[in-house]
Image (cartoon, rainbow, N blue to C red; front, side, top):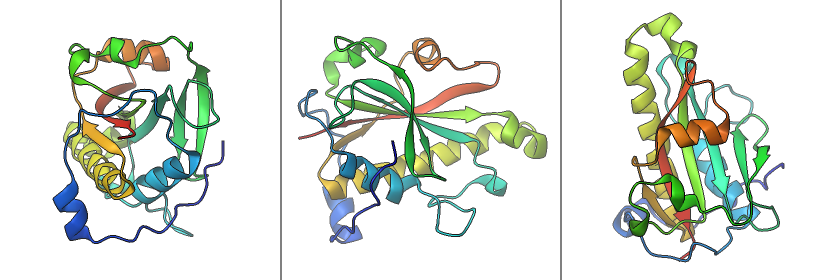
Length: 195
């Protein structure tokens, strides 16, 4: 699915920083629109026009961190797991998810969550370890932090409830996304829902 181009957001950085909070409220069933998702992912994680660089820093511009979206409420799209491709600004459907799938079931403390979509950042270790060795681990965590902060700020500007969350069950995410855990592992996640 090619996402709509990001819309302009009329707010100030000061306002977004003041408004940002790690929200746990909201309706898990409220659907995000494709335009909201296009603006969120395009501004936070997108590739810059006619350049290789993206809207966040990466050690050696190697971009070892990949972005996945598990969504049970995305406008016209059925529940599914997707990969975000910043080069084409698109969501690549990986697999369908049953309509009765409870996203909270992969969290150890589901009572504290309200979400309709989950962004998962994974690291493909070999992408940067060939150049940086063991330092690739730190680079991936730092990069995921930059990406997460961009998501938090853009989501806040769009009025989407957002929360960084590191407590999901890695093994269940690996199984759900069909990752080769020897090559790629989850490093961070962010929950999204409409207020």
